[in-house]
Length: 214
Image 1 (cartoon, rainbow, N blue to C red):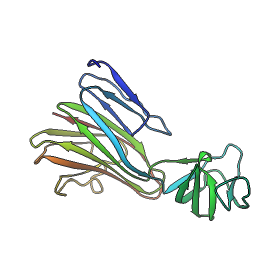
Image 2: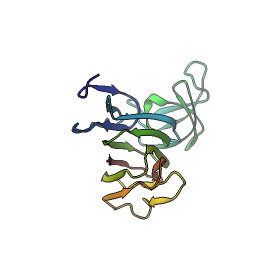
Image 3: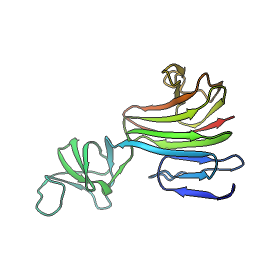
C-alpha cells in the first residue's frame, strides 16, 4: 500500500492520520478510524456498556423477564429518553437494574462504551484526532506508546481537556482541574506507555482532541 492509500475501519474511536492527510469523520452513533499504511495503529482492548438511553421507534419499550420475546413476560415499560443502568449484555439484550429490573432490546437504545481502553501507536511524526462520547458516567483511557524526547502536542476541540500521565504514573496534565485548557505541548520524559484519560459524570458529553507527535 502506498503513502496515499488508506484502510477504512469500522472499529475504534480514533481517526488516525499520517503526515499530509487532512480532516476526519465522526459518526454520531459509532466511531470509525481512517489510518495511513505507515504511521499509526489502534486497538480497542475493552469496552463495557454501563448506561444507555431508551430510543424505541415504537415506544414505550418493553422490559421483559428474560432476554427473548418468546416465552417472556413484560414486567415494565419505559419511555423514550429514559436513562437505564446496564448490568449485563447477552445476545442483543441488556439486563437493566434501574429504573426497572429486567431485559430490554439493545437495538432500541442509544449506547456506547462507558468504560473503554484503547491502545494507540504513533510511529514517527504523525497526528491523530480522537473523538467519542459518553452516555452517562464512565472513563475512556487511550494508551499511547511513545519514545523519550518526542514532542507531544494535545489540542482540544470539544469537551474537556484529557488528563495525561507518564508510564510510571506521574500526572503531566490534570484534565479534571484544567478542563478548559485548549492546548498542551511538552517533551516526553521517558520511553513507554502514556495514558490519556477522559472522565464523565452522570450527564455525559461528546469530546474531541488532536494529538501531534514530532
